[in-house]
Every structure is written in structure tokens, then in C-alpha cells.
Length: 219
Image 1: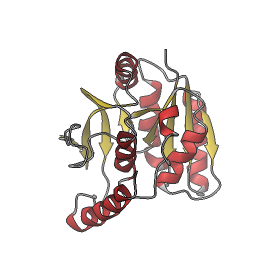
Image 2: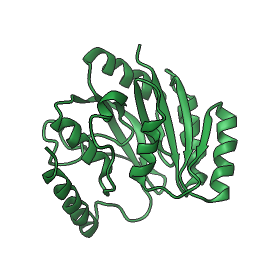
Image 3: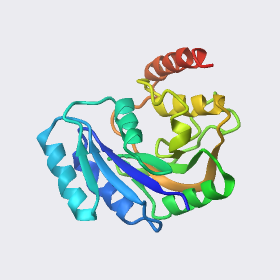
């Protein structure tokens, strides 16, 4: 059976931590290890993380410096110490069967990355979120950022890069290395959107310029 580490990444969003922490604690297949990572320098973030770590019985580490999104995820990968890891932003949350169904699928298929369908939530309203087809990795991001990743496969890449679409770039890098990506047909995660989204044309265009430049440099 594959061992799994779950990381909750907290960066200036400690007010949302309760829901993400409780969603990890409510998993029908509990992770072998769970760590709350504090990636900013705000005292209130550290205090909230320590409180919820004690509440749900997890570890809590603080970086003592402000990390980028990619830097936070790379830090998680270095301390995973399990076969598989995944990262969950503190303002998002999982449905109870997320880990059980994803790890069962990964174990049966031998995939290097296993993700799921998901919902979006904005202003308290939950929407269906259509994803790009996994068969066309370059048409859109086909997997949520909380997808399960085999740790050994992750280290075949250069890790997450400081791009607006950092997770999408990682999926492409893994695909270029002939790693297998899969997505199960279950909606098992809720992505909570705040403020201006990357789907706004000017932000999306800039993010795609970053991504395309990165892809051109891949072997």
C-alpha cells in the first residue's frame, strides 16, 4: 500500500484554515502523515496553524520567511518522506473520499500523478468546473493542484517553477518524461476562488506567455 503525506499550505490565508484542516481529518482514508506548512511571516498565521495542528493531530512547520507558491510546494516535496504526497491550499478543501479514491486508482493503474474533477466556489456559491481533456495537455490545465504525485517521479523534474501556472507546468514536465497522468471521474475537491482570477484575459495571457517559455526550454 502506498504511503501518503498531505500538506496544507498556509500563506496569509489562515482565516480559511479550519475548513481545509477539517477536510483532511475527515478523509475516509487518512494520510500516513499530515503537515501544516506556514509559508509567510505573520504571527497570526503561525498561531492559527499551531492551533489547528493540535486540533487535528498533525505536524506544523514554519518557514520563517515568505515563500512563493512554487517554493512552498518544493519545500513540501523535500520533507514528504512517503511514496506519494499532495499539497492543499489552506483556502480549498476536500470531500471525504478524495484520498481513498485517488490512492486506490493510483495503486491499480500505476500512475505517477492522480487527480480528480472538482468544484469551484466563489462568494459562497459552488459551481461545476469543466476541465481541459487530459488527452490534450496543452489546451488547458487538466488537473487540480492537489493531485497526488509519486515522490520519486517528482524528483525526476526540476520541481515546481515560479510561474503563475506552476502546477500545469509540472504536469507537462512529467508528461515529457513519459510519466503517466490520470484523472478520476469524481468531483472530490472544492477550489475556493478569491478576487481577480487568472481567467481574466490580461492575467491569463501573461500566465500563458510564462508557461510557453518554460515549455520551450524542456527537453
